[in-house]
Every structure is written in C-alpha cells, then in structure tokens.
Length: 150
Image (cartoon, rainbow, N blue to C red):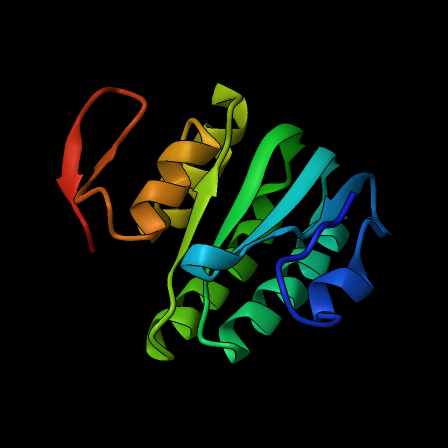
C-alpha cells in the first residue's frame, strides 16, 4: 500500500505497508510539495504510532513536511499522542511541519485531548495537506472555532 514519487527507494518504501500493533501503516509521498503522507488504518496503538514516528523522522531528515493520515483509523490510544507532539517539535525545528487528518470524531477528540491544542488536526486529508503546505492559514476545530497557524 506504499507508493513513492520520483527517484529511487526511500525509507517509506522500505517501511511500506508494515503491520505495527493492530494498525496497518503505509507511507506514500506527495513529491511536488515534498509532503510525506503516513497512513494508518484500523486501531492505532502505541506500536503503530512508534512505526509512524520512525517514518515521520525519515521525512524530517529530508526536510519535508508530513501529514499523518488517520482517516481510516477506528481509534487511537491516548498514550501515543506524546510521540506525535515530540515529532512535530523536531520537524518544526528542522524547518518541517506535521499535521494530522482524522475523519472520525472520536479519533480527533483523543488527539486534541492528548495534544492540548499543539497538534493541527483536520477532518480530511486535503485539509491537512493544504495546511502543512502553507495553503491554509487557520485551523478549524471540530466545534467550528478558528485559530491562527502556530
């Protein structure tokens, strides 16, 4: 389930569609905007988030921005959210960025509760991609409130 843009093998290709915990992890890349998209399906436990963290680290080492696509995730363990926060801080420090797409309200609620507003969380992948590319200046919360990019 992994795909890759132009030019040789990558960490995302090698990691491909590994199983980590209950979730399935894949990492297609959006080459024109150099945005790595890491997709997880099913139940996302700490092991799946650790696999995601490794893939996001690879994106950061290449100066990329990244989106964690949880659109097909049925649940996320709260205890793993701190990994995402730490990775976002590291990506930002190296000129990158991280946002998350989570279609299910329950998943968004867990992410927002665990991140305390520090992690940009969107309903759709398109919204998360637009934000991480800098095409959107605001984050729309599930309650409909808006806040400026942080």
